[in-house]
Length: 227
Image (tube, rainbow, N blue to C red; front, side, top):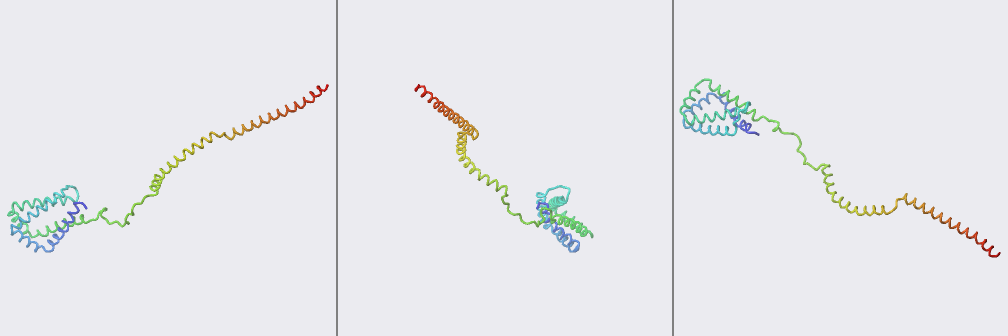
């Protein structure tokens, strides 16, 4: 609630009651006003209270805007001026008030003006705005961590473990790579084995052919020796 609405809620109902009283019991209010103006000390006391109230309104709400809030500002400055006049020249206030009260339609005119001002201030002061309207929405549930946030936390917690596991795996991977480099590739190994097998076969054939040639030479040499 802002200052304008707070002051309007205080002044509005007061003016409404005063306006209705002046319209309903005009003669009684006129008699009370005459008794009040007959005592200068009461005028002086009323001047002090009015000045204090006007200064409070002006200091808290000195807004000159083109809406209903200007009514509060004008009432504050009128209270300041009225309080100063009552304190400085209470005798002239007494004479001026007596002349105004003696008019037959004074209570009706004053009651209508005060009633209209009170109705405007009461309506604007107690009107519920969009911010002040009670909402039927359920109370907001406490925010919980979303699934994405939980995943991020779990990933952040798993990162150190993953780095340790990766550090452990690095030497094993190096060993495997060295073993794989040391081992001949399967195709090359098969080709080498084939060449070796062919070479061994050719050497075996050569040996067999040499033995046969030697065996064939032996009978010839023996026949020559006999001759």
